[in-house]
Length: 472
Image (cartoon, rainbow, N blue to C red; front, top):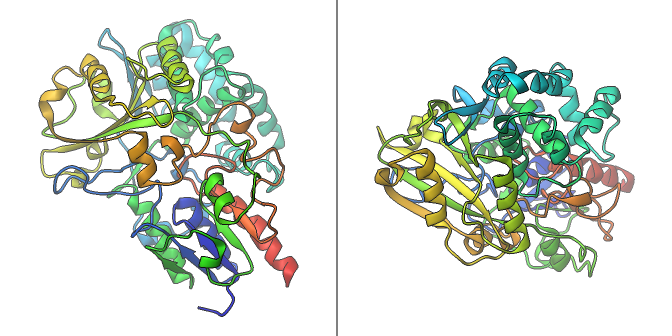
C-alpha cells in the first residue's frame, strides 16, 4: 500500500465498490475498508434458513442493475456476473384469480390491463422505449454530473414523471392498471401522492420493457463479488472486518469516500449538524423462506414471474404505505415478493425453493408482521404455509443490525419522498461533497438513490477525481 493513497473508500456495498473501481481504472491508488467480514452491503447472498438454501438478505431483483450505465462499461461478466430472466419480470394477482403483468413485451403488458387501459399504457411508455439507454444515463446522472445526451427526451420524461403518481393513476379507467402501477411506485416505500412519484413507476416499467427484471445467477452476492474481483485486478485493495469509527482509523489519503448513511458519515468525519435535516423513511419487515415446492399461486402468471406484487387495489397499497410512514403497522401490508429459484434452481436443493417477501412498517418498529404477511400470501396462494420448511424474519432492528446503512430498518437509506426523492442528502447541486474538502459520500443517500446500480458511486467518483486532479 502506498504511503499516501489517492482514495480510501469506506463501505464495500455496490456503490462503494463502484466508486473504487471508477477511481482505480483512472490510475488512482484505492483501498476499501468494510466492517463486515465479506463485501456486499445490500447485495449479499447467504444460507439464512437451511443448508443449501441460498437467500438474498436484502435486494434480489435488479431492473436497474442490468440497465446500469456504469455497469455496462465494466467487464463484470468476466468476473462471474450472469443475468437470469424469468418468463415474466413481474405479476400482480387479483382476488378473481387473474393477474396483470409487467412483461418485456409492451403488448402483453397492455393486454393484461384490459381493453379500456391498454391504449393508455401504450401511449404512456412508447415515447421512451427506443431511448431507454440514453434516458436512463441522463436520469441517473442528475443533478449535475454530466450534460444530458438527449435533453428533449429527458424533458419529456420530466413532464410525465414530476407529477404525483396519483395524477398518473387517474388516467387509467380500471383497477388492474392502477394497482399494477401503484405497486411499481411503492418500491421506494413512499406514499403515492408525493412529487415525482410518477417517474418512479415509469422507470420500473421502462426498465422491464428494455432489459427485464433479472436476478444474478447465484444471488446478489455475484454483483458484489464481480465488482470486487475487477477492483483487485485494477490494483485496488479490500480490507474486510475493519470497522471505521473516526477518520484517524484510516490510512492517510488524499480523498475519503463514504458508502454509508449521512448519519454515520457525520459522526465519523465530525461534520457536526451537516445532515441534521436528512429524513429516514419507513422500514421493511422481511421474510426469507425455504419451501418444499413452488408457491401455489391461484393465478397462472405469478407462477412464471420473478417478482410478484401483492396489493389488489391502488387504494390498498397507498393505505398500507400511509400507515407505515405515519407510525402504524398495516394489517394488510402491500408485499413485494421474489422467486429466485424459479430461474436459478441452484439456489435450493433439487425440487425445493427459496422465496423472499417484505412489507412496510414504521421505522424502528419492533413487532412481528409474519402473520399479516402470510395471510396476504395465503389469499393469493392458498396452501402456502404448508410448504414452509423454515423461515427467517428480519424486522427493522435486525435489518439495521445487518446493515448500518438501513437506519431504523429503512432499506432505501433515506426517505424517498418530497424533495428528498430528487435532492439528497441535502439541497445542493453538489450532493457528493461535504464541508470537509477531502471527504465525499457515495451511498444510496445520494442521487439517483436506492437500488443496486452503482450510479451513486459512479457520480461521486467523478467529484473525487476532479478533486484529485485539482490537487496535483
